[in-house]
Image (tube, rainbow, N blue to C red; front, side):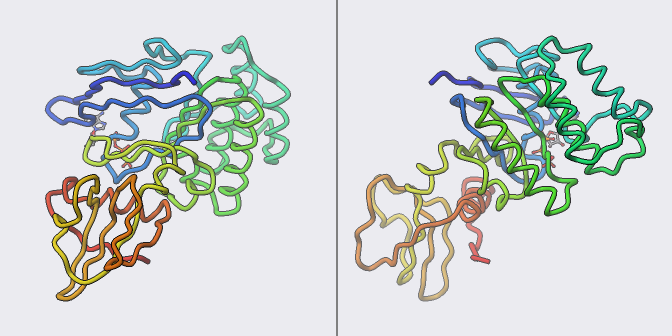
Length: 292
Ligand SMILES: Nc1ncnc2c1ncn2[C@@H]1O[C@H](COP(=O)(O)OP(=O)(O)OP(=O)(O)O)[C@@H](O)[C@H]1O
């Protein structure tokens, strides 16, 4: 399947501050992609490069086979601050969307607004933060884009609205064949909906791939204290913690780990993300990996 986003050595600097360093990824079509990483990792920067709001400092990015252009009808983007026009009503937003987008689907837009219980004559400035986020998403979806880029779309939503939003998004993406790239700090939410993951830490991509494949190749090892270097070739220690007598490690390995001196467990997405966020190489030191 072709990639919806391809980056090669993509780098973005704001003055002397580097927000994205040498990022080379290919995101295949047809996925719901979770983009995670700590504050300041470069997630918004990557999304803004992908929708053409920013230009690279070095390297290249292609979206749907082209250099991204802001305002493309093929790409829907919802920024972190859910930009809506506070002086316009909900209904006026829909009319503006219809005017600006040739592929506008009025039935999707009106259906969602009714479902959400938003009053078409209410000004966007008087909506709650969550309602504004829902309105911004409705505008992006009604364009019927091939790719949706969402920057922390659920941050302002209450837990129930978050769940409904994500279920609706998944159903919509599956029905319409839309690819979605969505940043979030809420990994438990992403675990429910994403089938592809990108972890960005300190402006660099630490890991990217299909969730099933990532979970199948990462293991939690615990056993008597041991130097991670003794694990042997083909095993990458992502994170390690040690007591005087015991070692616990998250290890990436495509081959099964059959050493009986280790107790080997699978990990969930949150463990995986935490491991890469605390990876020795990510911040220059081992950090204790506590399972919640
Ligand atoms: N307009 C800007 N001018 C200068 N520096 C910026 C600008 N926007 C972002 N940065 C810096 O670039 C880096 C990456 O920021 P970015 O917003 O992409 O991170 P993020 O992963 O989206 O963070 P968060 O999770 O907090 O939203 C940070 O160090 C940030 O301070």
